[in-house]
Structures are given as structure tokens and as C-alpha cells.
Length: 452
Ligand code: FUB
Image (cartoon, rainbow, N blue to C red):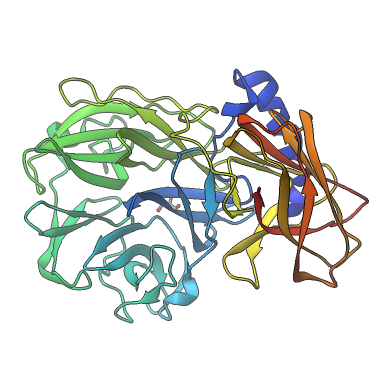
């Protein structure tokens, strides 16, 4: 990704800021700029929204996907990159196709259901991994497929009575009742009848009479069950059905997100967080983006009074920020609203760091609440070369300069030291840009920062 996107991301983020959106402060979709992401699955846990995604390989010409990614936010604008806590290697019996998954929380554990290719049969199967933390590490929970019927896109819904359901399918739509342990089930997988009343009428494909394609996302709101799904490939739109119970009967309700965005697939995840409703999806909006190089994005929406969905369109602005970011505690460098030109990688100090930084790259941190004013800035940095400078800019990558920290060589890309520099003019709530300058090649890495 670094060679493909570094330069174009710089240009495109500036173009987005200047042309597509009303101000630079709102150019926050897609959510991740450092890799291509797909198939969003949001989960709220302990006041934080976690976003689980797939990962399209750079330059992919098929659904070439080998691992999954995790991001999180507390403000819907700045997202922390937690890296990749699960990959095909997690499942010894799988050999390809790390496709659209879903994470469910139960009994203090996180269960990640994913479709992968079963090495022994060459067909798609659904595995389940488990972790004690939302950011992993995840391990194969049963050492074999949970479901093995060559269909994809698992989604778990736990009803108010505690019964958990696993839904999945393409071209058919299935469910099975999961046991309390979340890694086994009772009864047999059951097909949900794909009737036109339930899932709309498709024209021109006798093999698939309804609009249902893949990617079910089932949830309950005000006593009504919703099934949001990718419809009528290709290209797909997002439609939905509702039912009085978790197993139906389903009634088709129409389109949520029309065909948009330069990817012939789409995949929805719907969740409420901090009093708002959010619709996650993917598109081909990043440079080099398309049907096999997708990016996850999010919109805020409000249900209609009768519980139906409004039409939701893709935007480059994304949702408004919920609250502000606190600059006087340690903030991870990989917590950003927008990353231009850089990548992330696992840090030897734990978590992730921002790396592969070159002259002119920047990180945007949205809505930083400086209050009465910051007097100094400290960053944890490393450099195997001779370092560079971190410019603290307000409002835009070329906005007012509040301070400059000089970073020298530390002897290695993971040899961390702290640098501190004076700050002036950083007051109120501002978008902060960490702009990197220096010579040629990679300059420095940043693990975390903090103002005082
Ligand atoms: O990402 C691979 C596949 O594309 C997913 O499993 C589908 O939902 C579609 O998004």
C-alpha cells in the first residue's frame, strides 16, 4: 500500500478537502486510508465502538484477502488502528478467502465468525475464533469449520431471551440456533425461504428470483427484527426486510443505500452508539480503489418515525464528531481522522505505531480540545535514519504552526525515545495536523504523543 498510495493519498485528501466537502475538518470517509478495508462489522463494547473489517490486498484483481483488521473509536471521527489480530493462519484448516465476518460478545468473550476456504474441500466454510479482548488475539475456537456448506457471510444475532442465531448465505440464506457456548449449535441449518414477498423481486436471473445476494445483518429494534443485506449483484445495493421474529416471516422493505461508490459489492453493518444510529458500508473511494480494493465508510442516520430506514447516500464527510479528543493524556499516533502517506505497523512497545513517514506526510486528529492552551508537546519517536521534524499545525496541513519537534536518529525504527518541544497558539477546539518534514526517504516513526 505504501508505494501505491503514499503520493496519491496526499493529493486526493487535499482535493477532497478543497473540492468535495465543505471543509477539511469533515473529509473523514473512508475511515481507513492506510490499507484497503471491506465488509464492516461494528460492535459496541464498554462505551467504545469496535470496527472489524476484511482487508483487500493492494492491487487485488479478485477477493484476495488474507487477514482481518480491527479499528475503534469513541467519537466517530478519530479511529485507532489495532492492527490484525486474526488471519488465515488462525485457522489451520483454511487456505484462502478471509471474507466477510462478524464479531459477537457473550460471557466475557468475543467470537469472530468468518467465511474462509476449506483446504480439504476447496469450498467455503465458516469458522469461529475466540478472544478475551475485543482486539484479540483471536484463536480458532474449535479447530474445524462450524458450518461447512460452501456459503459465506456469517452474522450473529442474540435475542432478548438469550437465544443466539447464526445467519449466513450466498446464494441461499440460512440460519441455525447457536448454543450458549457460541461455538456449537442445536438442530440443523435451516433455509430461510427466499420469496419475493420476503426479499423483493429480481429481474433477469432465474436462478435467483429475489433481490437477496449476501451479507445479512440481523438486529432487533423496538420489537421489530431487521435483516439488512447486499442486494442484486452486480453492482449491489443495500436493501432490507423486517419480520416479527428472528426466523421470519420476512417482508421486503426496500432500498437503504442505492448503488454507489465504485465497488460492485457493498456490505452493511448497522449499530447504535452514543445516542446515534450509524450505517457502515464499503466502496471504492480510495485512490486505486474499486471492486477488489475497497474501503469501509460510515454515515449517521435517523430511522423514520415508523421504524423504516431513510435512504442513506455515501458521503466523503462521514458523521459529525461526538465530543472531542483530549490532548493532555497519551494519544496513540495511530488514532486519526485521516492519515496521508503513512502506514501503521505493530510497535515493539505494544499496540501499533505510525511508520513509513516521508517528507510532506501528515496525520489529522479531529476536534482536539486544547482549552486554555497547550505549552508543550511530547512524542514517542524512533528513527533508523537521521530523523526529521514534526510540525504541529492547526486547522489544515498548512495551517498555523503551533510548534515544531525535531527528531534525530535513534538507531532503529523500533528504538523509542521521547522528544519535547514548546507549543503556542493551540487553544480552543481545533483539528490538529502532525505534518512531517525532512529529507528524502523514511524519516521517523511515532508511537504516541501528548500535550501539556
Ligand atoms: O469480501 C469478500 C466478499 O465480498 C464478502 O464476503 C461479500 O459480502 C462481499 O462483500
